[in-house]
Length: 357
Image 1 (tube, rainbow, N blue to C red):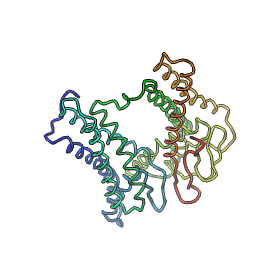
Image 2: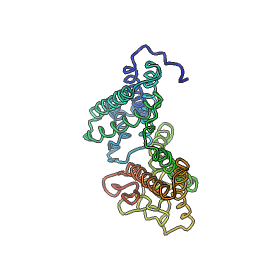
Image 3: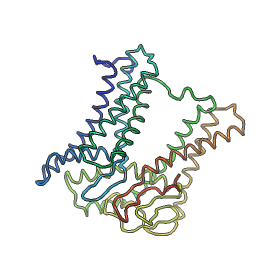
Image 4: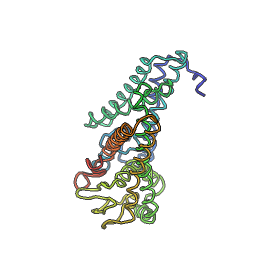
């Protein structure tokens, strides 16, 4: 209930700091809890190495490459990134809600900015501690990832908790752009997710067969499923690039798109059984090209509804601007879904840039 103040006796800056730290600690403990059963089953690994592995998992969601069983993985598990963003946003929203009540529901924007700064600082400090514990050499990636996640989750959470609309000061003609861009990107992402879902359903037998071949049962099988779920948003972005025709790569010199597929040897990860077989263009697959077209139409309609008094020329200009901004957002997301799953042939995995942008 937003009308009731949270029952905490601390000043709001302390609440922001404690909430941000608690959100990070919850994630780290969850990772450690997943790894501990494996530690109990093994005799050669020390407990500190398990704690370092939990830190490495947390850092991987912030864009830091990790080494798993001797394999260098630079592909960001965006599922972990989304968890960090959601928990961070809720933590900052709670702190900003206390701020909102303590200032008689009229907090100054300066205080909201201070809440975002405190939240981001805790995220940066946690990244430094995790990087030191994991003994990683990718300090810059850890800092940049923590800064971006801290700022994004902090701004959204603080604005929600303090009931502030950061877009209210946009010019009148531009106030419909965020909604139009958001809708366009959402339709494209929904199309990519639908593509991934259809591929998993069509190749379900192959996916199940690969899972059975690995022989992972019990806790190991559960961890294997969690591992694939961590990369599910990444693969959904691959599906989005696929609907736009550039497609994605799964290895050097490979490509997967509706216009054709050329793959080499693929790791025996069950979810990769959804990849199509090598072959030329599938005419039926071209129907997915309608996704970005429908997305653009939705964005154009929302732009015109936000500014009904605009003429044809202004409407076209705003529609073009909306499409350009949507393309930049999708291009940025596509770059996040590119990386590596090894050092040689699998050093190029993910959306094909800059074609996707």
